[in-house]
Amino acid sequence: MVDHTAGNKTAANWRPDSWKDKPVSQQIKYGDNDALAQVTEKLCQLPPLVSTSEVDTLKARIAEAQAGERFIVQGGDCAESFSDCNADAISQKVRSLLSLSLLVSQKTRQPITRIGRIAGQYAKPRSELTETQGDTTLTSYRGDLVNHVHFTESARTPDPARMLEGYSYASLTLNYIRSLLEGDLEELFNLDEEVNSLKALAQHKELHQSLSNFRQAINLFHQFNGRQTAHKNLTEFYTSHEALHLHYEQALTRQASNGRWYNLSTHFPWVGMRTVRTDSAHLEYLRGIANPIAIKVGPTVAADNLIDLCQWLNPTNEPGKLTLTQRFGHQDIAKTLPEMIQAIQKADLKVLWSCDPMHGNTHVSNNGYKTRDFQHIQSELQQAFDIHKEYQSHLGAIHLEMTGQPVMECIGSRYSIHPQDLGKAYTSLVDPRLNLSQAFELIDSLFINQSQ
Ligand code: PEP
Ligand code: MN
Image (cartoon, rainbow, N blue to C red; front, side, top):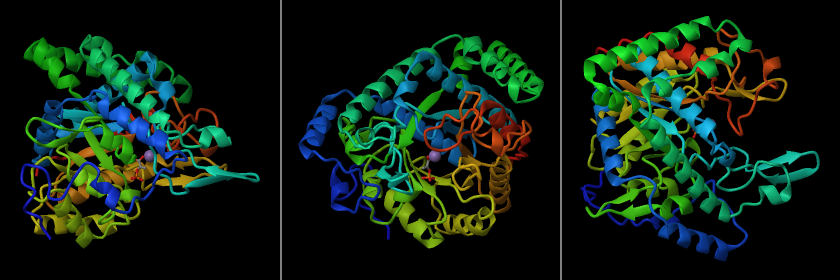
């Protein structure tokens, strides 16, 4: 059912807090509601982190990607930690995503827009809301915005004051990202140190080679397009996070002079698979904001339900507004995706299709680590490109969990990480990420023919 009343202004019967009238899954339970109210009041008074014009520009970029004229690369940690708010970690994340996106643009032959899972990716949904070790059962770690990862009762007790900390760390991170992006291109695309630290994994010569090819390409781009255009094209960067903690998201939701409400804690909020439900609090919140938004689409969503969800979230079929981040798993994508593509085509809905080849391919190794097999990730991503092409649809984005650190969290790849390696360099707080060489190998291995 399409609600045509939404128009360009506020959606019908929507308020920044109308989500509270709906069932809230993955709810965070605080012991002290007064403390929660004080924190959210304080957050409401603090300045926004991003601007409405940046958000509008990103929406226009996503509309171009929908139309097949641009490609979006979204990536970063599963869960950012407050302790990662330091110069080295932030710079490494930004430089990795920039360099990877250059490889993607060589593959797709399209201009790229980059979106980090960064500057606010602090709240996590969990399949199990409690965790047991020995005789002790505690609240699961729900991201640094909510509680601390240590397995003690006090660390795991949700503390609303962490939202203020999260806001500050997001703000400091964003501030540093903005200054980095103004900096020297050579430095921004210099990953020598990261590549050298991967030496231990296996032959890294090829990686070095691709990086020096990149630098040559950047220099050429520079010469032909002039410094300013080159800089702008190569470094345009936006932030995203899962809009899970609705008290936090609501507090950073502001009405602009054009009358529309924007979530100004990030450019691109998404709602995760566990909270994508008809009539859920999370979708109620999303439908009223002017930002471009994404929903994760996995095995829990049926094709006809997807159409209702899209019309509910984007009743005017506004270009650039809605991204569907598909995450089925390598074994199920071919069974599920064609039907969804056809349903979207039949209803003539404007969506950007993005492939997250990570979250449908997670399993626990025999030695107890949450991991993903590189081959499965690669297979799902390649199938995604192929299926969209076969059905005259268009895959315009990828969404990866990745890091510039030399971690060993996903198994497989040319660098042969085995399950027994998983304990050696596993630092993710929640889900396993691709390291830089795996992320490069993944993109390099793809056969992409974007011309339709
Ligand atoms: C995530 O992106 O970290 C996540 C939890 O994904 P999903 O909602 O797809 O499971
Ligand atoms: Mn994750």
